[in-house]
Length: 388
Image 1 (cartoon, one colour):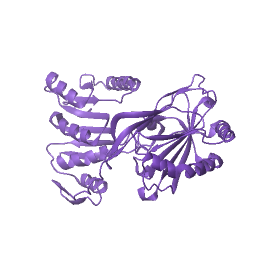
Image 2 (image 1 turned 45 degrees about the vertical axis):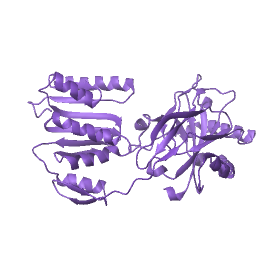
Image 3 (image 1 turned 120 degrees about the vertical axis):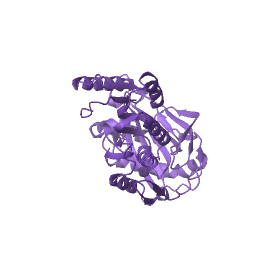
Image 4 (image 1 turned 45 degrees about the horizontal axis):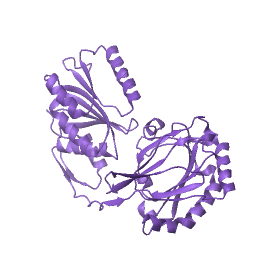
């Protein structure tokens, strides 16, 4: 921007849903614009890209976008279509930064964008920022892919790219997608799952190991605490710190598992693999909507189990587990249906449901804000190596 004085840079800014973050980020950018003396050259716009471009064409018809930074929680199709829509508004030698698309959508959309229009060129990938920020340049005078572009495309789509040239790409026919499957919001809840003395001992063990709990992380590409807080907030205890009680719970789960699978309508579920963690959800904790087997690291999961334990009387409210009817067709993201069921946490109970179902944990409210008054769970996932 500073080198191209004749150009007007337009920043499209579409932050995430958190209104506090939005306000702080906007003020931050405006402060930096003022410090650089660019008030007359930067148009700071907020909102969805299609609406912004319509306003831009109507209110500022001579303006071209020199720098576009777009951050929005979206899918592959939206990412690609909005990128293509921007072309008519970009200045020569423009820069285009894209961030925060789900399920590898940003990588695939960037690949396809360069394949559709080789005026886009990959400059850099910032793997450790957001979900991975992609910086592309736009040059309508250079309609050919660079060596860097071709190397990136080859690395992103190994085995799928049959041939490349600066002007076109030839892809192999992809494997047919898996058939769509519907997963109802069905669950099985068992009360008084463990002897009362074991339930109490697990609670005391958790409270005594408060200093060993660490912030929970998501499985997103940028697995940082700040990134994870966009999706979940809680504390987790590694299995190594509760192996004795974890083994007891594992044996009990294995004993009831065959009957649970029948009730859930899950056929041939092999429980060779268990994964287990203890979680403390204190005041203000939550987990936004997700499925438990959406990432390569979690693909084995077929059945999710949540064992609840807490002080009596219950020292918190909220924290309900909301399970949704879900349609899955891998590798596509799960599709949400409106119907859901809700599980209220009760001490010494356990809940089983399909790991393919979208679900969320509603916010927890604990007036004392004490760790000992948390909503405690031991989360367990059952599955088979054939799904990894």
